[in-house]
Amino acid sequence: MQQQQRMCISSLTISHSCSASTTDSSLFTTTIPKTDDMIENNLQEDLFSEDILVAKNSMPEDDPNGNTLHDAREIRWGPQHAGAKILAGQYTKEKRIQEIISIILSIIFMIYNFICIYRYFDVRNWYLIIPSALLGILTADLASGIVHWCADTWGTVDMPFIGRNFLRPFREHHIDPTSITRHDFIETNGDNFAVTVPYLLYMAYKFTYWNDTDIRQIYNFEVYMFLLAIFVSMTNQFHKWSHTYFGLPSYIVFLQRYHIILPRKHHRLHHVVPHDTYFCITTGWLNWPLEMIHFWSWLESIVEKYTGAKPRSDDFAWAQKTEKVHCY
Image (cartoon, rainbow, N blue to C red):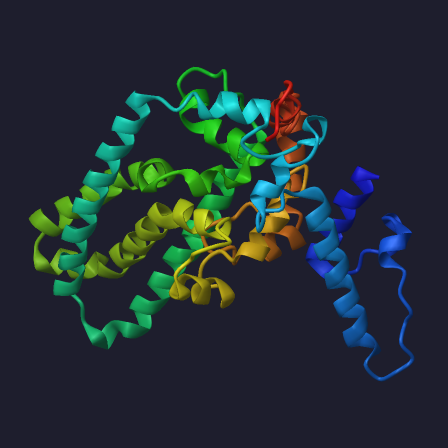
């Protein structure tokens, strides 16, 4: 049944064409209207079916505390999960220091490079600058998907250095999705800011030591790289907001509603077990087209064929950790 539901949610995500017969028939028994509105009603039915599948197979993030009110044996997500407790406890003081340094350096270079970009800005080149900026955002979205897919699907928390420092948050996130909403700005964004530091430093070097002619020749590329760096840095913040159902500023809700940044309902599709779809978490713009071409499953089949590694085996192992939990 769970496999059927997983297959159904993927199909609904892509084309809304999954048959309701693959799930509990009592949930999806409807009367097909004999009117001119048949197509619209069928689409609404499929969307309703998708909502039910998401609700049944992911943590109820709009009421996360309700997840801990059930009998301990039924708890599947949240801070009371045994694996989530262990993983949360592995966040170290050394890791915190690395994140603080990364954020400070990245912000300094961002400000300096922005001033330089503004200095060399020429409105006559808007028809090149705008596509460069949009391409930077799309690249950030694709990069977020690739990194997210790699960290979710492969490797173990026990791997030297990379396991505890970089894979651990991904394992924790799947068994306690709202943990990210309890992380402060540093813990949420430290790693993403760290990724941008090397190129932002190199960009600052070029703006400082290259002559004006050479800078103008690479200007559009630097605009592309700057927007890429900005959106890479903010990816996990957008991700955090997609899990935040209360107290968001109205402008953030506006950006989510119009899919300028990652929307809440859109990202919930990734959190349907076994977390094998919708990996892009910057804007989410590329999720649907990548699913249409079966991009992630194609990559997984190649990796598994040549390495023998099973996708998400470590993720599944952490999800199965149990202990007696007392709910109050």
